[in-house]
Length: 271
Image 1 (cartoon, rainbow, N blue to C red):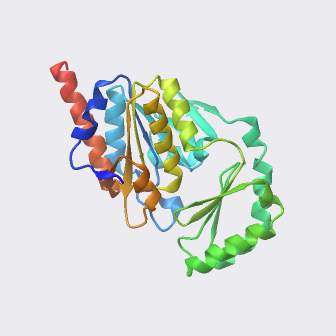
Image 2: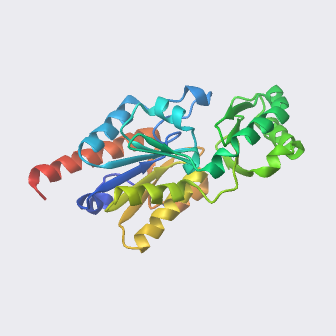
Image 3: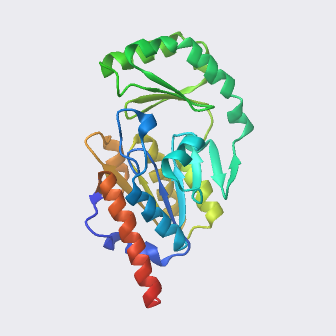
């Protein structure tokens, strides 16, 4: 079970390793959850903290279920590295990478959307994310009925059978059946950064893959820590899978700011 961070002393030893890499989910971690997912934005405080970290040489990787264009729009951080669509699209130094195996699913997503359009009558919002399609039901008058409508529509869709079904916070996603997730994305980005230590922050089930990968890196000799974002909607497995926790997006903002301040002290003192 994650221990609540009240100061950064437990993770301070990681700050001595160079380069330090900080990996974070976006929705529910850097951006507050809002009724319409399209309205979500990273807070000014969080954005400035990440800019501060990058200015001090910290590798910042934003690992998200959003597509790349939306992730850029939400964060306003063109210099960060990204793993969008749960790692199916990487953006490293401004160069975007999507494997051909993922691109092949783009037309199948359009077929799924056409075959499941009726779920919108239940208050479901369908999001086309290229090789992934997401069914959001947070705004539905009856979320339970909306979730059932999604399940029925997917069972009746021939195109949906080509995908794997994943659950998130008030969202059902169809993703290509590829061995790619936020954990593999974290490892890829950390490797390219040549990270000396890693910190991963997330709030949802998909972020547990990041936490597991940090554990594996730690066992392989790369120091690291995982931080869960606690909230009334946080799944138990997120808190169970992390080393530490903070309270909500405000807690993440506090943590990033404290890391930035501690790094400045280290730089000033020469330690």
